[in-house]
Length: 139
Image 1 (cartoon, rainbow, N blue to C red):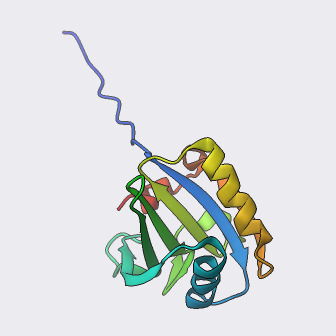
Image 2 (image 1 turned 180 degrees about the vertical axis):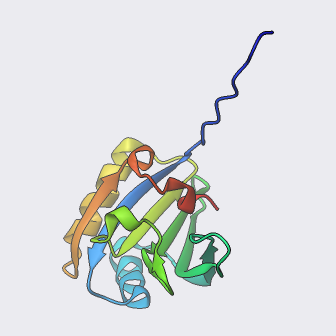
């Protein structure tokens, strides 16, 4: 009897930037809006089932849509109501997720601009495929 194996691979169609800062989420979004001419607005908290059988963990979420290229930006807190969104990256306070398309040149300019904001300690591009808990980032 022939056996066929189904290989399941998650399509990670987004870019991820880890942001480290001591500021509250609304304050850092205000600064990003000010320095980068974005328009992040608060959305309902992101509910993620991190622990099976337990109530979902809530993470603050801000949204912005770049209408010129139909690119969506999500600013997500790494520390939630009862745990971390990406536990292996506890030093990162927030994640900037970019869905749809962004040019590599624009991405480099964005990371540089984030690092120029005085209150941001570091903004680093992360490869989502190397994160163990990448399923938490799928919504």
